[in-house]
Picture (cartoon, rainbow, N blue to C red):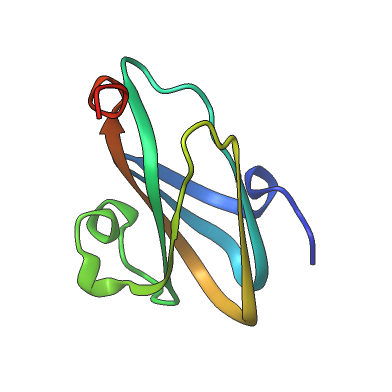
Length: 113
């Protein structure tokens, strides 16, 4: 199944450093594409870590705040100026929920290196 996350999610939450989605069904994910939008201020994404969960019946706010409920799948480095982040999985990943965590850096620090 191919689809946009907007069409596949039932519920979503976010913080300054992560996005959390409950999917409308358990999905086998072979590839994930993220499009980086402009951050406020001087921040740029350095790294993206993807977590999955197949736990049901747990409030999404609780899941957002408890990394023990998640399984880390992969971490990818993001190049400065990279707008599209493409994650391909060797084997499909089964998930009922996704957590995408961003590690950011201040651009003024990068420019002065």
